[in-house]
Amino acid sequence: MIWYLFEVVEYTFVSLVCHVLILAMLMVFITYTASKFTDWDLPDIHEMTIQESVFRWLYRKLNYMLLRFYAISSGENLIEFFVVILALWMTSVIGNYFSSLNLLFFSVICLGTLPALYEEYENEVDHLIIKGRKDATKMLKKFDAEVLKKIPKGHVKEKKRK
Figure (tube, rainbow, N blue to C red):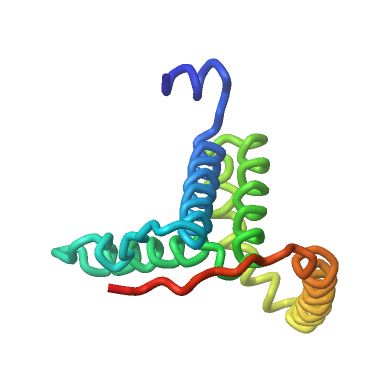
């Protein structure tokens, strides 16, 4: 199956990881949303962390990423949820056009050159970032007002926590 995916279909590793993460996020989102309308008990995410041992730093980072993944996937902040889905999809599309080795090489080149370019053109980059942030905020407010506010919300009864 792996040989078929990577050699015959020419599926890239980056796309595979992104699609698996998108599916996992959608499954957590659907489960979390469905539990609001039924009597399902959600698992306690703090019980699903990895035990700390010799590699404490790695486990702390992995546990943080798992908790963050669960928090985003739960759908509490729909804008953040859709932004992450969009970013994973865009990374998947980009990953289709490059091999994993080429993406790694490109990342190393960017890590070496972008800090020097930022130092050279710091004022212009900061101006563009501020302008982009304002434009993105306007678009998100417009999306929120025109789309998200029109979604009807039903009555959700309070759950008793154990």
